[in-house]
Length: 375
Image 1: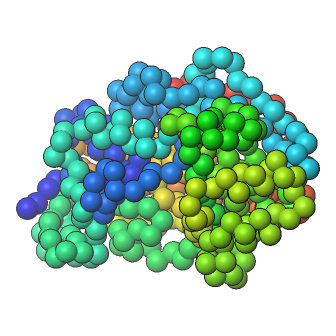
Image 2: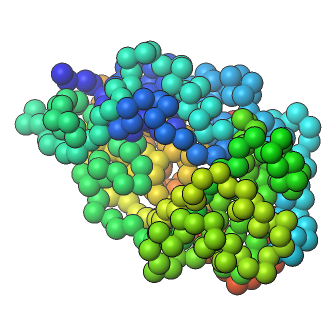
C-alpha cells in the first residue's frame, strides 16, 4: 500500500499535523507504535501557549473544544524552598484563557484523535527501517514485518526517532534524571497534599534538586523529582526510601508527596539535542517535534511540536504539487524559531538544577511578563 503522506508518531505533533492537513483536504496516514490510544498513561498536564500550542489548535479548528477542556485555574503555581517557605505564589485571573491554561496530555491527545477520520491512525506500527524508493518516496518496514510506502515521510516519532537518521546523525546528551509517580484521588485520600499543591503546579526547589507536583483533571497528582545528571543506574531511583534519603532534611510536609506515591517511582533519563542542530534538506522527508529538536522539558516541547505541525501543514497546503519546496521553507523557518528557544530551555534546565536554583528561579519568575504575539 502506498500513501501520499505518512506521519510516523501519533503524539501531539503528529496528530496536530494530520488534523490541519485534513482541514485542507489532504489525507495522511499516521503510524503509531502503541497498540491503542489507551495503551499507556500519557503523562501529566501541560500549559498551552497562545503563540504556539493554542495557535496550532486554532488552525486545526479546535480552539473551542480546547477551551471546554482546559483548566484556567491550572496556571496557578507556587514555588517553595526546602523548609516549606513560599517564595512565589501566582494566582491567575479567574476563568481567563488569555494566558497559558493547563490541559491533561491524555485529554488533548483524545481531542485530536477524535477530530480525525477513524482510519487515519494505524496502531501497533513501530517503524524499524526506511528505504528510499527508486521512483522517489520511501518504503517503510515495521517491527512485525508489515510494509508500507509513501511519497512524503514526516518523522514525529519523538526522542528516539527512527526517521531522524535519514537527515542527521546528531547525538543526544544526558542532561538530568526525572523520577515520576502518581498520587490518585488526592482530595479524599490526602487533603493536606491537595491543599499544598493547589489547583495548578508546585515546585519545591533545593540545591541541585527539585520536588514538583501538578494537579491533573482527574483529581490525581503527577509528582516528579528532578536531579542533576549523575552516573547512577536508573534502578537507584525506583524506591521511595531512596528518594526520601535524597531529600533528607526537607520539611516533612514536602516529602509527604514522596511517601504518598502510588506504586514504585518510574525514573527516566532526560536527554537533549544540541541547540544548534540543523540538517541539509532532503526531498520527501522532514521532522517535527522532539524528533527535530529534543529539548529539556521546561514547557516548550509540546507547544513547539504543535507549532511545527501547523507551519509544516501550511506550507504543504500552499505548495500541494511541490512538497519539497514546502519542506525547505518549513525547515528554514523552524530552525530560525527553534534555536533561541532551545538555548533558553537549556539555560532554564541548568538554572533549575543549580546550587542557587531557588534565588535564580525567583528572579526568573519575577521578571515583567512579555506580551504574547497575537494568535
